Length: 82
Image (cartoon, rainbow, N blue to C red; front, side, top):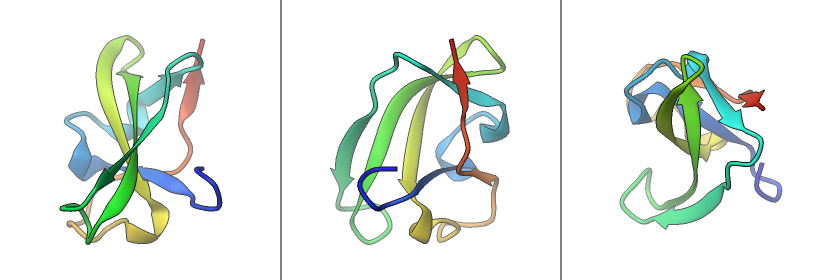
């Protein structure tokens, strides 16, 4: 979450299954405004892990905007890694 907005990960933004990713506890999460994405939204960016140990860039979009770029995996809940 960022303020009152709930965010989610969408498969369309990732080269791995988002159902296999985790977010290390100490990984910083930054907000970035993207004028060219989904009609201008703020996304959240973080360095996560896929399959337990493969580094991956995570991009979270506002939940209200998901599934506007095709049908793919989506998750709101992300496993926290040590």
